[in-house]
Length: 445
Image (cartoon, rainbow, N blue to C red; front, side, top):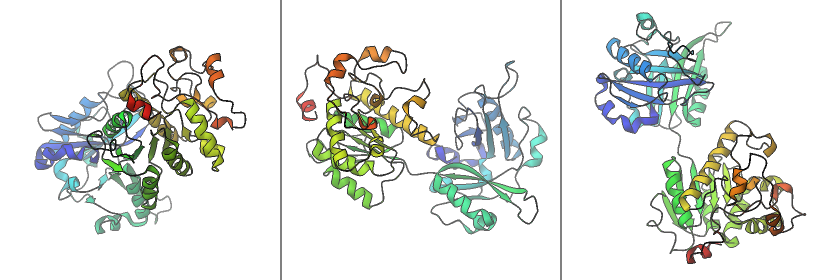
């Protein structure tokens, strides 16, 4: 329930009228991840959604029933058959939903804490029989565990209950999101599961560091913040690095980008969830940051610029000691090949690539070669050739794009470069040839 805890203020103020439904486990294709929750009031009013509609009605019925009975139950939903009579997920996955009267949380105040640990029933109520009395026999006891807290130290009650599973609980808390930890009886030969705990933790937002303040950084900061990223914009020029120009950013820093990145590294604020986007178009600013960022395991490193800019950038970085493996992490020209031109469109293109890279990393295929990707995957601009704004290429079938002769001739020779580091495209922000460049745009070329 921590995913919407700030929306549940009304519920927490009147706990007798509300139940909380929380997805605790998922498998296969499902619309929402574990940890997604929905609040249901005794008059049928809801806050949030757990399935986008597939099983919403059944979950609301279960929540209303649990408000009457006081029972905490676990419901499983699988694939709904084609006859339309069964309750389930049309997407073919499986989901388990914990339905709990809010009043059973007792004295725990999850709104004030980052972690919430609750007991789960050991067995499910039969799906499709949500309103029968079958589930009442597996309701949680009145003294079921419910602990809300902060920090790494487990409360005494939880530490005592966890026993040998304490380390697994702490790992789940550090990972963020929602996880189920089974407690087993090691005194019995087959180590049966004797208790199940739902571990919920609010992880700190992933960071996006934008180096270079302009119209593109303003649009990117606003869009990224809407996706839940903690956004920092940094530039050494006071005219551009202003809060007024970047209302969507959480921080606007007036500092040399390389100094700021070094400062963040020293403070331990750069990690595997951090994304770095370079929008400066000035090698004095972007090369030092790129050199440092590409040597570290971060979520994403992207740089805006033309193919010529990218070619020069790569040669300088190679001269500085970066290997083909390092340069293979650089997403340049930045973004997916969406035909983006305006700052807002470019922001979508960049964030779409960031999401694609992160999802591939979660699936364990972040470093897979281009040929191994699914044919339906969006094309990344770094994997295309020719003009970034080439409509003919975008209309071609996936994988069929080849450099146009004129475009290929315009690319500087790069025979000494590794294929992974070869120049690959003009920036999304490059001014179209038929359009007059503004004074500010020229300053960033």
